[in-house]
Every structure is written in structure tokens, then in C-alpha cells.
Image (cartoon, rainbow, N blue to C red):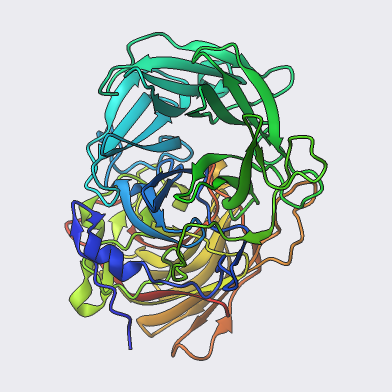
Length: 556
């Protein structure tokens, strides 16, 4: 019996009713809540890169970098900082400009957002490294959210975070992208208009990290006990640490202190995140850890204030710099809440896109038909670009984040290519700068299932076929098993992740096909898993399709 996850939607955003139906999802493959009053890290074993968090009453909200993936700026909700579900996306369909809506923007667009709540409204700011500072807002985290407002048109500003001061002034902290601005490792602050829709003053550099805190970026701006605080990561994504600045004046001068570092823990690069308190007065810090192919997973650390400085993690030697914890007691939020995890498996019983899925570009409405009454999603074959080299160039990839270190993804699909021409394709894909998959294609010899791999897709690499088999059935079950045993890619902190592909005609007996694939991350994102349906770059008034019955994430 299929789970009835019927999703109501307004403008592509989940309503409160749909949120309630989705919020009790519990993963088979990763649950941070250990059921005994403790949790394990990461609390989110998925690529919620550059996370930021805020609290409104007894509710916590988290968002993260989404780069060029849509819906963008997924919003997660929690009651206890350990159990999370996806409730909406602040940019449901398209990032401006939309003059080229179907072009993948690998590694571009939404960098390191901040989420804040002020005067009854949620605000999310982010820096687009090529366009400028953007903002969206909403009275409800579930949406609908406003259209993105270009707060300042400028190249090179990233990692933006606002603060509303007691005197009514609004300030914004930000960093610079060296690749665009020609300067990095500094933090700046500028003033915003009272309605936070435009920058009204110059950016003043308030901290230079070149000597001791190189690659400082990702600032989060707070005020406490008369001090302005800037929480910021430094030292690089995989190897860095967390720094905090403080000053009595918004423009400084600022003192600085390292408050979290790897130390003797196995958690590399513990930094970039946000501070949040609980209704009971506890303090916590959420940050990412870069693990390679799985992206930047999210950890929760205890935090305390000592002499108006934050100490994050456990500070065994009392030097003011903590180390990350792997397990700890759950935050005291006054109550105990049910276990839940971000949504993964999908029976396609809804009439809109389920919230775990993202396309690889601004969304074209012609890509999919969400047939909830038939319990499926139909993906129409869509022409690849004229300059197509590989799936790296394709916008209509329907993908989701990997949810754990060891898991299996299985999908059931029925392929209906147009018999008038050849070259339509569909299948299961593990996508990154290297990618691999099980690909069905209608050829002159009939339908062929191939296990393919593409190395250096980001640099123009093309696919190689490792093995193929002719198939007569239009309905197939495709599977990929992700395996990681803790081994690292040589010379790095990246987990070594292996993928093995198999297929079945009946959903019971699976046959391995092709070669083991070593997964690799995408451009600033983790590897993603999902499906697609394409046709050659030819002019025709119609094409075939694939009907996806379900997509399931399981332990085995």
C-alpha cells in the first residue's frame, strides 16, 4: 500500500496541510535522534551547505546555499534542532534573470544565505557572486515568499547577513568572492534602508583575516549585551575553524577569537553556520562539515557564553576554543517531540513537486506532469542543448541530496519513447563533476539499458558505456547502492564513496550492471541522485516520456 502523501501547493510552496502530512517522515538510513535523550552528529547527513538558522517562538528554521538548483533556498523546520522536515522553498521556480531559464548554473547564484525574523516577517538575504545582493521575505516560513529583490547590483559580494539595531538602523555584513572581486579574506559591513530593500551606504571593511584567519567569509551578525558579534569561518572549507569578532561599535574595531576547531576530533573543518538559542535559554551552534562526495553535512554543537565570548563544542582544556561533539544530550526545549527527518522516498501521490526534489536549473513547466491521481510523475523528453556534451549540460535533471553515508536508491519507471525518431533517454543518475547511471535509450536496435560513466563532466568530458543489455520490457526497476566504510580519498578528508548499479524486470531479482563508480561532488554541492528524460537537440513537435511510479531510499 502506498503512503498517501498528498501535497497541496500555492505557487509551488507547501501549505500548512501538506507540511503536516510530510513532517512525520522518518528515514531508514539516517536518524540523528537516538531515542534516549541524546543525538548524534551530523543531525542532517545531507548537503545543506552554509546553513543558517533562526528561532521564532518554539520553532526553528534553517536554510542553506542552493546555488543554481530549483526550487531554491529550501526551508527546514524543527521543534528541537535535531528532528527536521522540509516545509517550503523561498525561491520556488526561478532565479532572476529568467531570460535563460533552462541553463544550468553550476556553482553560481545562491551563496551562503542568512535567515532572520524581524517585526513579524522572515527575511532571507544572499549574495549572488555575479549579480549582487538579493532578499526575499514572507510572513510565514511556509510561504508564499516575495519575488527576489535586488538590494544592490554589484559583482563579488557574497555571504550576506542583516541585523536590525535598537535605533532603527539596519546593517548588513558580507564577504567578498576572490574569484569575482579580486579580494577575499576580509569582512565588510554596510547600511541598508529601513525597509531593507536597498544598500544606502558604502561597504566598510571591518576585519582583515589575511595574516591569521585567511579565507575568512560567511559572516553572521548578532548583538548581545551591548556587543556586536560577527561569527565567521576561516581557514578553508575542509580544513578551517570558527572565529568570532566582537565590538561595541558596529564598524569596530573588533577583537577576534577562535572558538571552535577540529582539535583531536574526527570532524574536519567545523565552521560556517549560525548561533541560535532555545526558549529555555540554552545556546547552540549549527555548522557544516565537508565530507566530499556527500557534500557539506550539518552538525549541532552545544554553546555557552563565558565573559561575553561564545565557546562552541566541548572545551576540555579551558582555552576558550572548543572541539566538535559526535554525540550529546538533545537541546532542552521544554518538551519532547516525535522523531522526523527530511523527506527522501517519494510515491508521487501528490500534484506538485515533493519538497526534497530540485531541478538543475530554473524550472520549465513543460518538463513534468505530477499525476497524483495515477500515483506517478511523468517526465517528458526535452531536447538537450545544441552544444550538448553530457548530462552536465542538461537543465531538466530531477535530483535530490544524498541522505546518508550508506543507502540504496531504487526507482520504478516505464519508458515510452516516440517511435518516430531515436535517441530519447531516461534512467537513474548519480550526478556530480563525475557522474554515472543506468540509462535507457531507444536505438535502431531497440531499447538498450546501459551503465555509463562520465569523468570530468565539468570540463567537457563525455560518457563512456561500461556495459549494456537489450531490454524488451518498458517497465524496469533501477537501483544504485552507495557504500562508504570511512576510508578517505587519498590525500584528502573526503569520504571514499562507491556506487554499484543494478536493474530488475520484476522488482525482486536484481542484476548488477557495469562497473563500480567512485562518486564525486558537484560544483560546490554534494553528489545528487535522481532521474531525467531527454531527447536529441532536434526540432519536433512532440516526444516520448517516462512515467516514474516511485523512488525509494532504503537501507539495503
